[in-house]
Structures are given as C-alpha cells and as structure tokens.
Length: 72
Image (cartoon, rainbow, N blue to C red):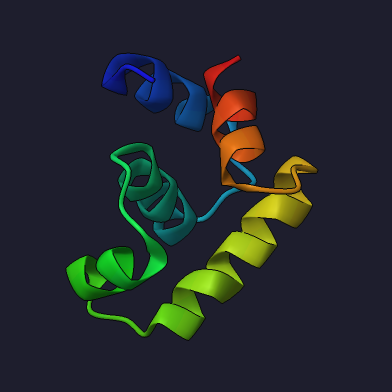
C-alpha cells in the first residue's frame, strides 16, 4: 500500500494509539514482528500484544485485513 494512503487512513482511526499506528506503519513496510520490535526498542511480545489490540479495535483478524481497513 502506498505510504500516503496509509498515513491518510491512520488519521481516520483516532481509536488507535500512536504506538499502534507506528506498528502498522512498519507492518506496511513488510517488517516482521521481531524487526518491528528492534526498530521500536520493544519486545516481540509487546508487538504481538499491540497487534492483538489493533485487531480488536479495527475488527480485523490479521495484519493484511487491518492494513486494508486503514487503506479504505
């Protein structure tokens, strides 16, 4: 997904925290949880917990569905 579409989509989702938006941004770049964790200086388990929260808030079952919701 183009970065511009992601950024515009993230602005619509005020329910997401700043960290959750950062994690989605990195996921959009194709990074895995471990790589996201390294970039943000957090544990992979914390990244997974953020994704669990993102999925609940966006009513999405996985990363692809969450990113597609943001894009639309």
